[in-house]
Image (cartoon, rainbow, N blue to C red; front, side, top):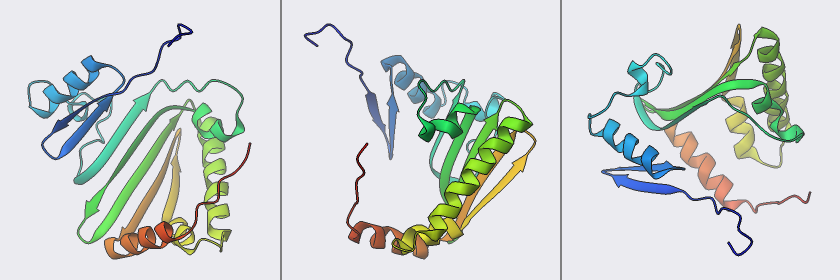
Length: 175
């Protein structure tokens, strides 16, 4: 830019039916090597062995999460050291899993309490029946320092939820 600040860039590549995104060109190249079988993947490394199970539509993972600032909306991420997400299909159901690894059991308990509160608020939001349906299909568990939120819904219901949500006007908020 004219002020001399760096402009963030996102690199991408299309690989068959997949689109690969990364913050560095080298990261995208590495991902393409994995997809081509020229490099090992994370499921075999022991770092994220849970990745790559079943029919997966999208998955993401991150570790060493450092969230700057004091924004209370980031409270869940501030308590975690790693996160994984995947969404896919098992039979006629859409399945999703969001796993947060906290530093310790106390941190995981705090994360679980925050997420339970958010899910409860979603269940009470009768203005958005689609959101209520999704929140009712969520299941939260905690095992030591790990918190897992799972979703298991019939694919037909997920499509109905998306159609309903697309019809509802978006209500933005002001800071």
